[in-house]
Image (cartoon, rainbow, N blue to C red; front, side, top):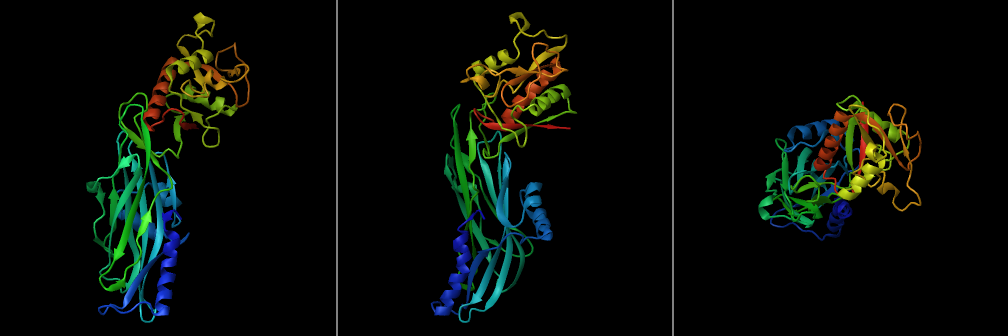
Length: 390
C-alpha cells in the first residue's frame, strides 16, 4: 500500500491498546477517549462507496481509477494523471477499559494531474466518510504538503484547512507545486507528499497523521522541439500515439501496422518501445536512408505519393541511427502494395520499412506525430508506443 507510514499506522491501534492495558493512559480533564487510525485492505471498498465518492470529489478522478480500485491504495497512472483509492478506519476507545466507543470509516482518494503546457501540477486528497458511530461527533481533518526535487511549493499553494468530517460533505485539500525548470532544454523531476490529521476536542489522545506520496516523480521540461512552453508529465508511463486504420490516414496506419506485424518495434502494448530522436542531422540521415530521393538513386515516387518510413525518422530506431554500431546497416523492407520494387519483404526486429502512401496522408501523419510529441512532452530518448486501432 503506497501510503507512507502504513506499518506505523497499522501498529498505532496496537500501541494504544498496549498503553491502556499497562495503565499508561489516564483520564485528563474528564476526557476518557483516545483515538487511533489503521489502514484497510484490498477489497474493502464497495461500488456504492465509489459512486458516492465520484459524485462529490472536487476535481473528478478519471474513470479508470474507479474501474481498477480495490481499496488497497495502489496507484494507477497515465502520462498526465494518477490516482489511488484507499480505505481507513479510525477507532475511538475508552482509556479506562479499552472498550470501543466509536468508529469512523472513510475513503482516501488521491488525484495527481499535470498540464502539458503548464509549469505546475496538482495533488488532491479527498476524505469521504463512509460510515461511523459513537464518539466521533465534532471530528475535523486538516493537512498540508511538501514537494521535493526540482519544484517549489508556496504557502499560498497549500490548501487543506480544518474541515468537519460528517455525512453531508467531503473534506479535501490540495497542493499546487511549481517546477523550477525554466531554461531552454532543461528538465527536472519532483515528488509531492500530502499529509493530514484528524482531531477531536473530546479525545485525550489524537490519532497519528497520515502522509500520502505517489511512488513516482513528475517531470517538467522545456525540452520539447516545437514549443517554448514548460509542461509536466508522469514519465513512468510511456506515451502512446494512437493511429486509426479508419481515420484520416488509413494508408499511413496500414504501413505502420504491417511494419509492426513484421517484427519492427513500437507496437503497443507488448512491443519494444521506440525512443525519441531530436537531433535534426540524424533525423535527416534516417529519412534519407529509408527514403532516398529518386534523383539520388532512390525510389521513384508515383504521382500523388510520397515515401513513408517506419520506424519514424524522429526515433533512435530509424533507418540510419538504428544501425549505428553494426558492422553493416540493417536492411530495409516493404510490402506488396507499397510500390517500392527495390525492397523486399522481411521479418524480424532489426531494420526498417518504407512504403509509398498518398502525399496528404504522409504530411498529415507527420503533423499528428509532432502534435503527439508536444502534447505528451516526449523529449530526447523518451520511450513511446504506437497503437494502431480500428
